[in-house]
Length: 328
Image (cartoon, rainbow, N blue to C red; front, side, top):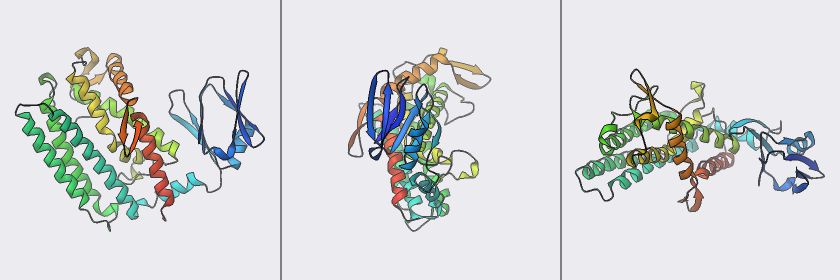
């Protein structure tokens, strides 16, 4: 189980072979044998005895900021599951599992794009329905291309091809979003640093929120966010986060598009500097409010009913377990 200590004033200590949680006059004991990981936030405390008990039982301790973002971690100095995962991550670029994972991530991204466009096509009777249909077929072609890559290849041999297929699909996808959005918000492709239009501005901020969620999920699952597969760690950036975020961009796309289509976006939400658009506090509030509402909704995902906000963590744990089980 995952032991979460997040109540202000809570204190985690050791009692025999158990962890004891103390808060005011209440006490709760949990056997160390039942605990796989401890998450502890600011405004709480733990004893060195509790740390020692965790280390002796190879239990990972993750320290979190008040925002929920990882601050640091403590784990056994001997080779345990966390260090084993990280060591194996280094070999994924030259192993069939590396390509297998990347293919799955890209296919999920493209499938999400199709689902979003299909929703936009429903009950639409104008000529844009045909435009959406053509884009969906274009993305399906790229899905076939990705699926057609030989399983005997390594990611280093097919990286350029995969990026090409992904790029073709994304251009078709965003072209349609620009076609069906309200006239005054139409845009010309993706733009970053700075965004050149309100839609891309809000999209970029949404991806930023998503980026931090993916990084947090990686760390909690024991994955090294700096060791990527599709994106190499030569960037000196969190390459695995760049890999994994592709699976979830579609959720942000839908949230942002919903804000625009329901006319919740106002020009007062943006500050302009030169040609660039920047989301101000009011704009951030509008996006974050809808984001939080959507993240709490439960959906059917890979055979389970799960809240959107738990999907990323669920996937990262599964990825970590697959890496652990593979002979690398």
